[in-house]
Image (cartoon, rainbow, N blue to C red; front, side):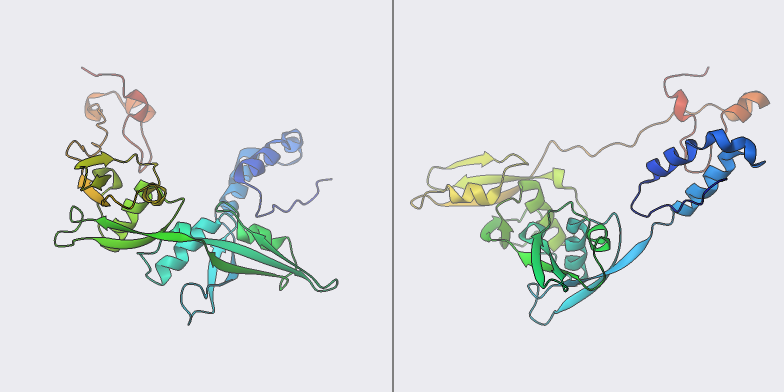
Length: 277
C-alpha cells in the first residue's frame, strides 16, 4: 500500500527528485510511467510558495513603523534589506549598514530572546519554526563613517559626493552605490577608485576588494587625502558568444531532426567545436 507523502516547501527540488526516484521499485503497481508522474510533481513545485512577514524599519525614517513584505522561503536577509531600500527609494544608502534581528517570545514562560541574523539567513524559514505571533523582525543599523568621493568621471558636472558607508563595504560596492545614485546603467568594472594625496603628489589605485573606510582611517592628519573615481581606459565590454550554425537546408532530414532545439536554446550548442563544409 502506497502512503501519501506531502512535499515540504523547505525542501529543495533536488531532494524531491531523489525521493521520487527512490520509489522506482513500485513502478509496476501503476500503469502510468514513473517519468510522467515525476514531471507532474516537478511542475507543481515550480510555483515557489510565498509568505508574508512584517519588518519594523523605524531606523530608515521616523515615520516608518513597519513594512509588510511578500517573500519566498529562499529570500535572504540581504534580499529583504535591498527590497526595503528600493521601496523607499534610498539609493544612496549602503545596504551593509543594515542588518535584521529576530525577536522570539515564549509567552507561556515569559522568555524573550533577540537573535542577530546574518546576511544569508532566511527569515521565512526561521519564522515557520515558531508559532505565529511569537516572532518579530526588526531592521537595525551598524556603525559607519562618511567618505567623500570625487565622482565627475561618473556624472559630468558633479564635483564630489559624500556617502555614509560601513567598514565592510568594498570598493566595488561603493562604486555600485554611486552608479545607483545617478541611475547609471554602466558596469562597475568600467571604473576604479584612487587614493589621492595632494601634498605628496601621488595616486594609488585601490583593489576592488579594499575597504575605503578602513583605508581612510589610516590617513594621517597633516596630509590631504581624498578618493577619486577614474574610468578604466583599457576596459573592454564582454563580446557576445558567436555560435557557428550549419545550413539546415543542406542537411538530410534525419540530421535536421536530430539537431532540432527548443526555443531559447543556442543552435548547435553541442557542436561549437565542429565546422561544416
